[in-house]
Length: 249
Image (cartoon, rainbow, N blue to C red):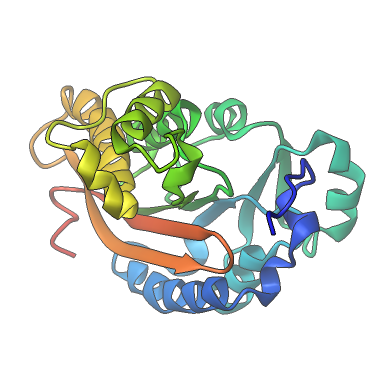
């Protein structure tokens, strides 16, 4: 039986707090984040995420890491009243709009933990977000992002035609895939997504580093790569952005 398609928001289709894969991922991330204390006190970080109506990550980071400077980006403008009612802490600042619109409005002078928990497939807007963040996050910041890792989102015939899917992927992201990726590589779609997003992050850093000294130049060091499936394959990548002088930490 084919599951009927729906335009309902994902939070209305499944309670994210009950997904076992997502729960394990959160616990792994919460074990990793305290190591950021080598850069700054954890309570001095700002958290930027996508709270939706549950604010699960916000609750965990506030209680476990004592982070009180929080920004939740909310793109469901028609759910604004419900989201405001569900906000668990007054320290969470709600910013309504798409990530592409909201991120440039924020002040990026503060070291941040950013988790963009997208529930859809990769797109040119997502890559634009990642490039923007790599151009603006301060040294010691953590960048995490979650994508749907379902290659069937990208066309193809029946049986699946990987060459057609590769073309559909390039059309959606508005650029060629990184050099060396072939159609057959889509059999490991999560790895293809990792390579595409890493290029987008590094593109931003290349532009940013052009005006910096060697010690000030920043790089992205990946520290997590989670693939899980609670009904749909999802992948979360994350890493630290740090200057050459801080990277030894």
